[in-house]
Amino acid sequence: MKGETVDKANTGSRWNTANGTITIVDDLCKGCGLCIEFCPIQVLGKSEHFNEKGYHYPEMLEPEKCVNCGYCQLLCPDFAIWSERDDKQEGERDE
Ligand code: SF4
Ligand code: SF4
Image (cartoon, rainbow, N blue to C red; front, side, top):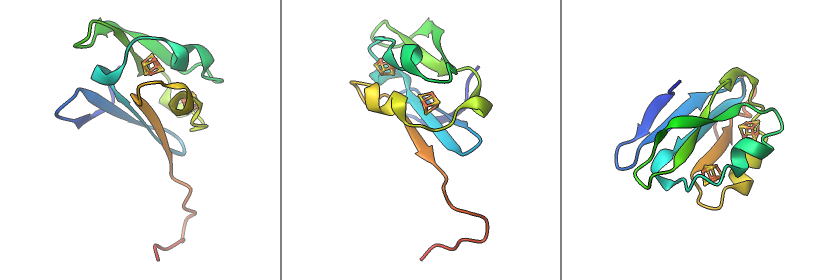
């Protein structure tokens, strides 16, 4: 499963979740598996594909279940995955 492509220099994908987005830049990943192992909701899986460094990078399996807790982003040593929350309430305006 692939999200929307977001990065042309590297290979990156973004998924829409219920409350925001998750972005994974495949080629920054070193395949440590921390994000997959410690996601509290277990919504990430290891891609069957290799990145340019020869590692299996993570992919989002169930974006609708991700709660954008940001734990994957916190754990990733290579800034290859990050979470963005859309916390704006309906009717809220930009300043
Ligand atoms: S933001 Fe939280 S729930 Fe979503 S993939 Fe990362 S660790 Fe899992
Ligand atoms: S924590 Fe980062 S480097 Fe490790 S598998 Fe996940 S995306 Fe790749």
